[in-house]
Length: 576
Image 1: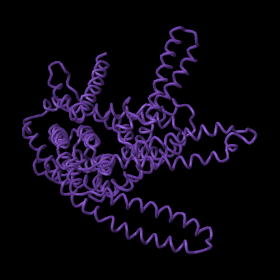
Image 2: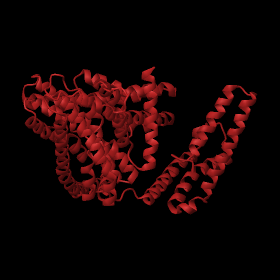
Image 3: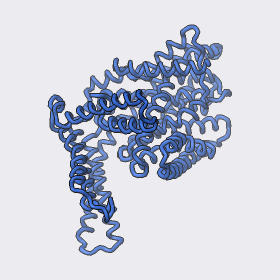
Image 4: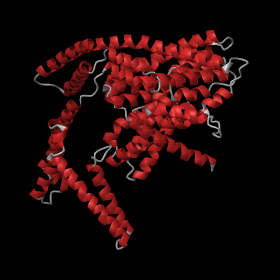
């Protein structure tokens, strides 16, 4: 009963804070940490201490999977250099740098144990940064880098943590063995995650029942995580790979019902888990302070060391990010040279009048590659990073979920174990409140230009125009669809063409008309009138249900049909 009551209160707090954060313009994770800290000192509130395995095995896999399935592979590929640099190289450098610092400040800790703590506090959590960035309109590419970093850096940190703990226990003989262990964990995790993604997408594509599809979807993170961990690899990385594969192939392999269901289900899971963890970070502060053995190191000294580690991590990130951005600014010139060379090779192939089968295949491959590289180059020039983007990227180093869980997984045999956990929590809370709290001000002061809404609307209209042209081509020979022995009425074809064109026309209205005129546009009038008709139909349906003249199964089917139609017409996120 007590556990259920706490769950109800927790969900109520999460929902209430989410609503409040939108009204006051402060990221929900920051408010939740503060609320958790305040609640932890309220008399009568029990002490919280969540076992690390609950977070690492129960929370982290679905949380990362929910983020991974939304990651566009194209965006990830285009930004793989900064993502890999920040999520792998910087995490390792930060872990060793802070490890050396802690080893110098805490006599008797040991270098391997200190590096293990460095691995705990090294990976940033992108949740707070991206939520702030979206609200304030950061450039999409900057958000992509932050999200990609957040996906991969957890795996890097946890694998490094495992290797450092093994080294501290004498299970690994030297740096070479640790590097081999790291490489094995990464390679096997990628293989397991890819295999799980392939198999589960195939199975889900054969399931016609949305309930069964949803059940399997919720199990996928654990199907990837558990085998990878049992093989001694990174379960977290396996989950990320499986999620990226599923998200990329869902458009071609899964039906619309599965994609819509996945979107709603995983957004809900992500909301509850990631916000719940930030609340727990705050709630655990009191018990952490109470568990400190001050004969070894006082609370004040421990927090001071945590603040020093925080400062080290912030400085390291800035020292890393600015040279990285300078490197990224040079990439377009190199990419342009490679694209020109590729274009010349493709031109030589096109000059050949008669191509054999092998040359035709090569020509198709080179054409696709050339178009993709041209698109990548155009994006690089249009959305390249400057010093403003580098500043925001450098300041977006808030710690969160993994630091919380990994800190509590440190072995009991470590010297200063409780102090080390408090150091990690100090880093997490300080970065969340200081960096997260000032990030909106920094973005406003720098006046970073984000998404061009007008350009996006025009691109959307152009895209839907292309889709309309390709879609209407299937009507050139309707007998192929309905059957050769069925005569298709011209009125039916005209209706399909008109319905198909409405979407494109509305997109062009959005692109060309100002908002004040868009309210009076023909398609907005159509939508408002159609919604009014649906509302009247819904009231009639409720009256019919009250009379009891129709079977419940007929009423339920009518309700579903009206719901689908309303969901199609209703703008996302609002009713206007």
